[in-house]
Amino acid sequence: MKVESQRGQFDLLLRQPPQETLTRFPTEIKRIIHKVTEPIDEFGNTLSRYRVVMSEGTPLGLNICQPKERVTDIPVLESPAWFTGLHGFNEGTQRMLGGLGFPSLLLGYPGGERDSWFKELTKFIRNPLITLTELKNLSIAQHAHNMRSLMNRVNDYLPIADQIDDSQALANGFSRGAMTLLGLPEEVGSETINIPFALDVAACFKEGLGRNNIMRAGLQVPYEVANVAILGARNLANWGLMSPNTVNLSPKSIVYELAYTPTLLRGDGGLLAKCVPLSQNMVILGYGNDVAGQLSEWEMAFINHPNVIVRPAPGAHGSLILDKRTREYVIQVWAGIAEQLKNGVNPDKFNIVHCLPKAS
Image (cartoon, rainbow, N blue to C red):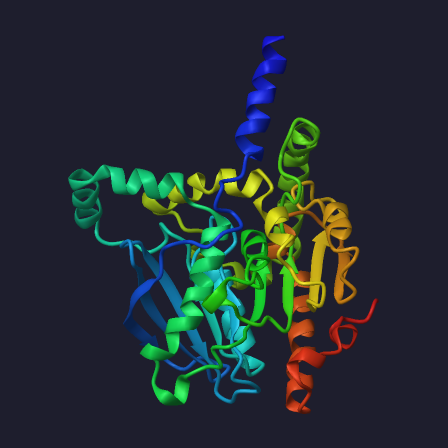
């Protein structure tokens, strides 16, 4: 009986969403500070790094990648997968999108933007309650709000030549980033933006982690370890895409990433999916052996969305970063979108099937 009681409490802890999951948040962007613009890369892109300061003081990192030649002024919005930051794999994805002609904005989560050890420690000692409250209230719904807020303010800080269409955005996301992008189309007054197309790779826990699937998740761990080892051996030459700085290893970042665990495991992504309009154009790519991905649950969630296409892929959750086939799939999808934009297709009239890689 005691074990069953503990399991019930565990289910409640993970499944109970915060009251504000599907409501507006009071925070907004206070200012955006330019840090550095890096040299032009092999695609002809320029990548600039910024610090975004929210109204309550939370700092967020931001990468803005400007392509050599745009196919559109509509930006691609992204946010990092769990335990990754603004470098390595995620930065590489931005540069790849720039090579296709897309400007992109990659907004980091709280905890990823850091000051010196001295400043961080002093801030915590002076008012630890601020940090503890921030850690308690972290959610993917909050970050979707932050991304919409960014669209409202970013042009105020960009040169005229670099400004974007701030009324709409394309969306690209992996894992936690894929879950977060589901909250972007939500209608919230002045923050509402049109999302003509989204690519969602390996979003997690549509239903949340409860006693019905926790055992399956535990059994998944050995498979994931084996999958990573196989992919590492197979794609060793391509690991430049997943450079060591993909994973954010600072102590502060690790604490904040761990604090994101409840919002990921309790099914907040499934709640945000309820905000997605029936007319939404979206491709969902999931892995057949990914317990966290719950591919069949996402299929059911969008069964009444005629323009949402769910595609299975071989592999497990680690494949989203380590398997070059995922990268190739993503490139082909966005190349198909870029081709249609070059041909003058209205973003609301995209032919999504045309963008999908042909079955081999």
